[in-house]
Length: 230
Image 1 (cartoon, rainbow, N blue to C red):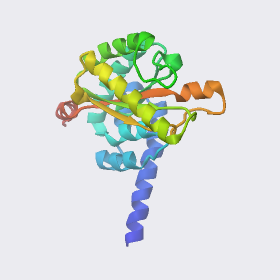
Image 2: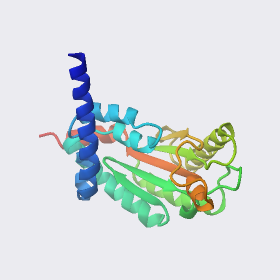
Image 3: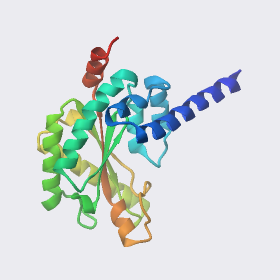
């Protein structure tokens, strides 16, 4: 009996992931928010979010926060508008809409970068984050996770510390621009989540990055549930 239950859970999780990935890719923007969670609701989404693994914690955070169903579609529509604003204000940023959230990646090509072995936000990076803060103020019903990542140069311990300092530097800067600290969370992963090949200079530049996850806060989730009650 125990094995049967385990297999059923694994099947539902697998089905949810497959449906989410394929359907989100082909759905229109409003539908994207309703897809993830539809096969199992927020509980399944939370389990998936906790088991995405070290390879994509940003995706795990988004999926782990799903509401699903019609309420998810409501949130997705709100996220569509916010994603479009970010793309307009920061053309170099890599903005990805996933389910009920937004994943924004900033590397050296996207306007947020740091001097070698440094974590201070300045120059063009400050200008980019100023524009981002402006958009975040327009949508106060979201929470923001800031992730710090490095390339493979240096020791694991050094890179973990550096990624921590950079993630915290960005969250501190956003707070200085008027974003409530209650909306901000910083996490860091050193060199453990490369997006490109660390054996090339170009690949290392892509791996030295800050990623952001934007998800609905509890107030927006409740609003979505109330607005979409049958």
